[in-house]
Length: 285
Image: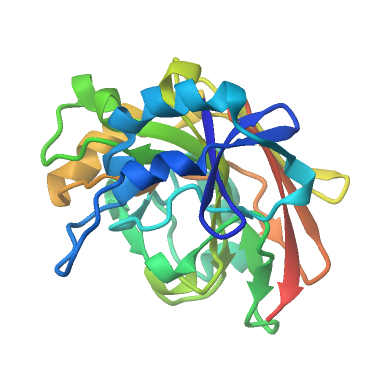
């Protein structure tokens, strides 16, 4: 099932080029008072809601995908976790390009560990990426995004996929420079998630998915998640060694070679096998 948040927190099921509006199922979500529990309310209750969504969808009103504003499928993640330099060929290009490395000795993920991005950087594909520092190079980085369902601490690698609510396409936008990654990658609009959340039954092996990114008609990035240094299971286990994971937490798994700059007016077209595609514009801030 492909679950899409659209037009001001409406909930839809994507089928081809249409959405079935199943927003009424969200009325079953509990009403909460301060202090709110950590995590995303919809994702936390998704196992109970999925049968209701499946029952309602066949008779739900439909709207064309092209007519709606698509938002991030996760509204309130407790945290956004990202994996640096998790493809060998991206390490090679980063070492060779001074516009990426800024004189640093680029190493692999096992040297850096993980980093966190600000939740305020989260955006949906219908919102264009703002170029807030036009004097600096801003690069695209397409990634498989993993959304945590049932959270936990010190999750075993062998059972890590049991904790996944679904998958999405992620864009980890990046300003190049000497500052820490968590700063350069956390500007508003710099984490694009979409176009929907695809439940795990539709993605039997997240470590074997083709994906690509085009800017205009130029293919910039094209790879397969089988080339991840830390695969999805290991990333979940590794992250949970440091952080308690909560429903709705987002793990960006890393980007392959081919990263490059974008400017206002550019259009990025992203595709991930079994998940779908999304088109994201770039604008001046």
